[in-house]
Length: 216
Image 1 (cartoon, rainbow, N blue to C red):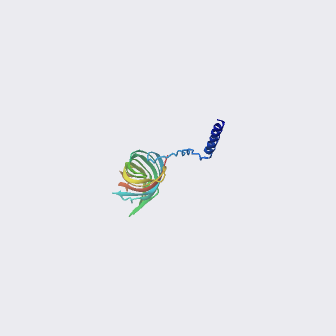
Image 2: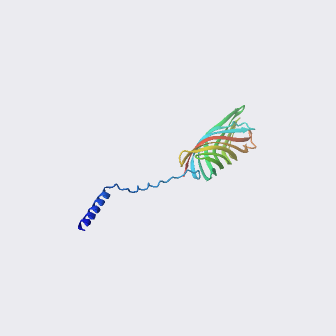
Image 3: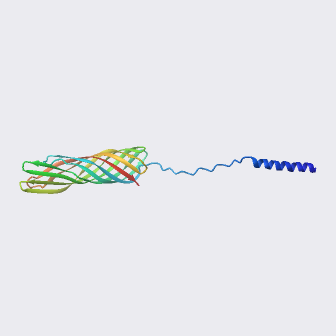
């Protein structure tokens, strides 16, 4: 009996020692959760823009002004599926003027501040956005004439509509670049009415520009 008890004790010790030598199988720790923010066009954004504006004047002695533009943009987008819609406003300044010489003198025509307030409707293909746009356009102008000892000058604000389209591409979740074309037919205007060398004209603007935006 004693021999059997001793044998069982030795077997228990041997089994414990063997179990201690076996490799352990511990569960690997779960990987740290990673946060992924999907891209969306929705949200508030602002940026800068620059380009070129070509004025088209008719029924006048003024020369048509072609000028560079530089300004800022602010807007807001909503996105539903691949449809993106929103509003955008910009304010810029035109740097050029045009002069026209005639038999008795010379006149000049200059563009100044330029603004548009527009709705945008676009179709998103991931980070590329194709859009059309339309709304209000306004531009400050200054006409002058010097002829036969007469000198007249007049500053006027000209309002009208604007339509166009463009493409915008998001390089990151916050930074995007765009290129667009706008056409703005503006109201007719008469300068120094009732005086010698009075000028009335019809005007439209063709605007090509690029921009860089930051989405907040």
